[in-house]
Image 1 (cartoon, rainbow, N blue to C red):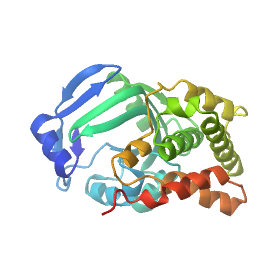
Image 2 (image 1 turned 180 degrees about the vertical axis):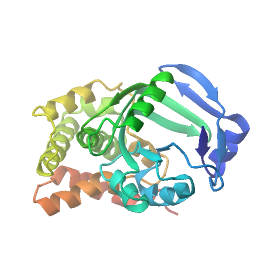
Image 3 (image 1 turned 90 degrees about the horizontal axis):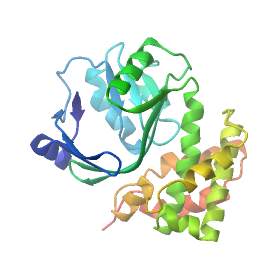
Image 4 (image 1 turned 180 degrees about the horizontal axis):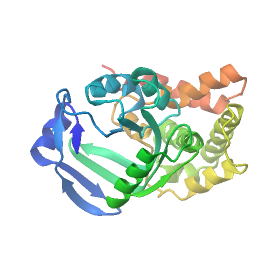
Length: 281
């Protein structure tokens, strides 16, 4: 396995490996090969594509030298259109869709704090149980990862999108934890409004979300450990760039195009827009 990293992260990984501080599995270190530029490496069987959505195009160009005709690129990103961007740049058929159900954050370069959950759902965009999907499933299982192959990955992507728009939106604009959001009736009411609006968008796009999708998302949100925040909220508090355009911005634009009202999502988008590029000054 080879990691592509840059800057302080690359230096830390080369020096100390990747340290995982997990509330679920304890603390451990892995020591993969780490490079900044993969040019000169052989074509990869699989690329786990785990960058922030705003870095998708730049990261595709970074991995281009190791993408061969059969290379699969599994996106484990927030949002619902990263896979389309990857295939548009690399050629149709490379991208696979994936959902990472996990709460984790970069504690410092080379150190990952894992707070809650840990599951991957992935699949081919056309719904096939392809040979490469089966090989990847077997590899994840050998690694002890809780994993599922989906024959409707578009729906899985949208289900996470509904969830993350609400959790990221409300922990972001309040600068509070999900526990505080749940305990504040007005905040929980707005959380529900975001879930309603993004679910309506999914249905307007022809995505076959389950009839009780809103209740399912609210149940999941009630089960999150109280001290957690979405990664967007963590990035906001640390002055980092935000995935706002891929999440709430995309929903607002889609709603305008399809005639689906998104007032609660727009409120989040407008409130966080000044911070989209990270801390200024």
